[in-house]
Image (tube, rainbow, N blue to C red; front, side, top):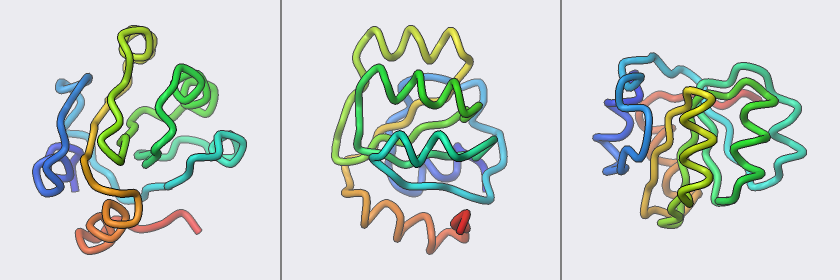
Length: 113
């Protein structure tokens, strides 16, 4: 499934990275703990409610290219600028993390563990 299909099916807003929405996604990881995120490598999609500059820095360190913010969180201008510098995709959903993960599961997105 592509990032575009995911965004459309969950009604997510594309904040940044529309040119990368054709990338395929098979797995996702959901966490608000950036220490857990640092254990990942090359995960196609991070689902998180932690919306601050450290989220973007952590994703850069872990080579994560797509972030889906939940609970109607919106990235700041500084976050968008840093994500743009790192060629990331930023999506925003109004749903809770639980509902978002359930919808992703229903779409066939697999967990890492």
